[in-house]
Amino acid sequence: MRSRCFVTATLMAAVIVMLAAFGHAPAEGASTPSNQEPIVIVYICDLKSQGVPVEWMNVAVKQINESGGVLGRELKFIYEDCKGETTLAVQGYARALMTHKATIVGVYPRSEIALACEAKAGELFPEYPHIFLAVDAGADQITDRIATDYDKWKFVFRDNCAEPGRARAFLDIVDFFSSLGAKKMALLREDLMWTEKAFKGIPPTALCKGLPSMKERAHELGMEIVYEKALKYRAGMYSPILEKIAAAGADCCVFIASAGNDSDVFVRQWATSSARNIHMSITAACGSKFWRRTGGQALGVVYTWGLVPLLAGAQTPEIPDIYETAIKYKLDLDAAVLFSAYADMFFIKKAIEKAGGTDDINALITAMEETEIVGPMGTLRYQTERIPPFCHSAAFLDPKDPMKYAERGFRIDTGQFQKGGKIVLLTKPFPGVEGSPNYYKTPAELRK
Image (cartoon, rainbow, N blue to C red; front, side, top):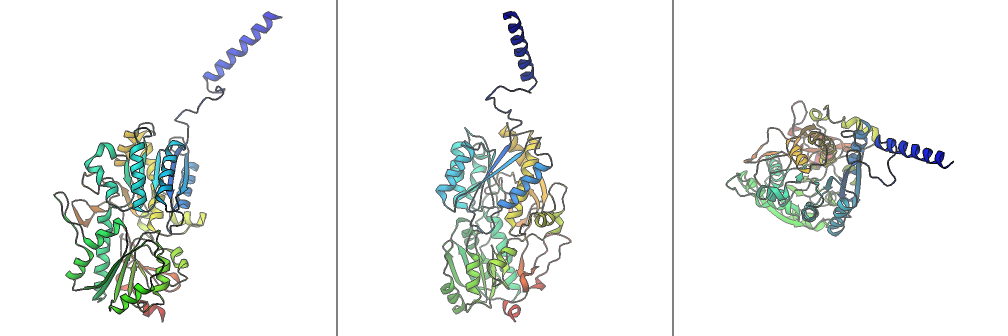
């Protein structure tokens, strides 16, 4: 009996060893091989922000996983709401690496929060190699350091342009209002780092030609700046400021604000103020959601940072059709950040495949630098010229001459809210996309 039991036990042990060798019976507590674990992407965001693209990113991950994932591995998307508070954002960033073991950590949208998280990322990177992705944040400091200390900060990327790109786009708005015959301009900005250079201009360096300020450009065109002010984030009370703008005789106003600001509150107060008939441009005022938030009071407002009805970039072999996706998943076609963030996921997929996986972070960084993808906003690629602050920012301008747009890069459009929330394009960012400044109508004309 003992002999028979010994033989049976021996045979069972042999079978278990064989099954374990072929992967059918892993030992209890054994970890999954790294090439089979999900690739984790964590997103630190303020859910109160108007353009927060969590739903679009979730859908992108779903689409990628349904098509086979990335090199046979699933993507896992986790987001943390920092409620617009820097301390919560930094805590969430540390948790993303230490607890969730993230390969990519994105931060949206405010530059101050992105910079605080970037500092934490620099501390943790040696122990937790990963990619830091600033989503739509504009401050130059985010990417300035990459050009001067590449080995330490090479893991940092920004999916939008740096401050010169935004400042360049706002010069186009000054030109547009001048073409309408405006002579007196009011300039408002949210008091953030990235908005300051639009007001002050960008001096030239040995590597890069500078940009004039909005005031300098206005003066070149014979326009006078009659009111100028930096506003607190979500100031809430704008009526006194709008009355001062009207009293100063302004016939146009540009308000540079982030997606998280209360621009809808500003618009509702503008529509009942003495300044309601002046030309009004607001950077963060875009999309059907913004129209609804203002109760239709955005009538006549010009937005200056992209709604993305860009047909030329919408149909690509690498990114699903955004219109079909929006209808299927009941998503808003809103601010540009939705579509840069949506395209980010497919860009990341392509970069990881190019790198052959996520185990070698240096290979993944190189793949991020070399990958290009055509999305709803045009070509998403990262600039690699060691020229601050352009290095590792999404291509938009020529780094050596920021008055020129990059040959291959993303594009923005400018439009206006007209009756019923219809949006007309005032620019023609792509061949084949209909848009003209002649479509513009004054707020007073639209309210008749």
